[in-house]
Amino acid sequence: MSDPLVIPCPHCNGLNRLPAARLGDAPKCGRCKQSVVLSTPFELTEASYPSQVKGDLPLLVDVWADWCGPCKSFAPTFEQAARQLSGRCRLAKLDSEANRNLAGQLGIRSIPSLILFKNGREVSRQAGAFPLQSLLEWLRSQGV
Picture 1: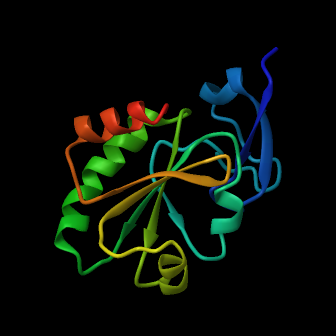
Picture 2: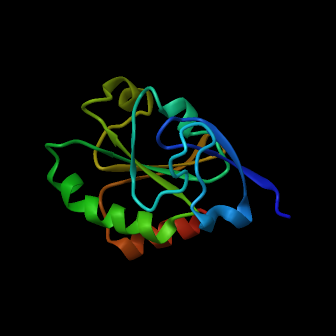
């Protein structure tokens, strides 16, 4: 039996303990009964941030804005990465316009910006949009 992982629910922010070996079995949240492991990015907000940075699966945050052309062109690449990384890394999108306080707290100076969190701490940051292979290689170099 593998050690359980703590994974925040992307829907209700409840913390779930799941065996690592069961991540591919579409686990449901104990609180809201929705999927805990997604293959699409979920929305990160100021309210959900404290819960979502917790947990044992890395969290990659794409900080974006609706008016940003490079952000919009990067969105399909980020969605592809979410499908490929499902069960290994959680991907979230933070709208910097709707969440100005959090974007400021995170020190966002340009968008798009990617921030990688592990065990509740920021471990790496990358500014700008780049191709899927480059994104995956950057994440591999970070141990994802």
